Image 1 (cartoon, helix red, strand yellow):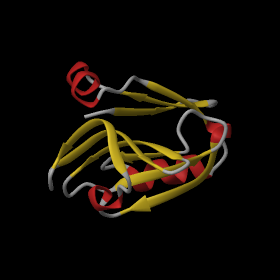
Image 2 (cartoon, helix red, strand yellow):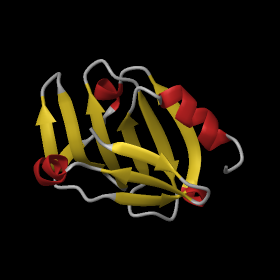
Image 3 (spheres, one colour):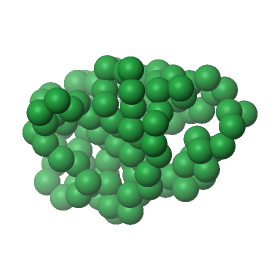
Image 4 (cartoon, helix red, strand yellow):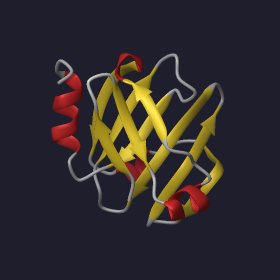
Length: 116
């Protein structure tokens, strides 16, 4: 499971070694200034849109990697039955990040407020 760490300036998303290999993803550092919107999604697994390229997709279980659709690239890390945060981004390699986390509501409040 990826780890989301908030710093005063950044959101750090760290993946395990197995996740980096199977999802073909790298650890990401997202500047908090790049976040334009934060949304809580109850079912992150069904919220992914587009085609997986590259990444891991286990039907009804797990999605991890990059999902693409015209003009949009999204970092995805979601599991079945887990809420997710959708971060809309600007000025970053990804236009959005969909990250499953049981602490979604807490992280959303922290991201919506001033940096701590």
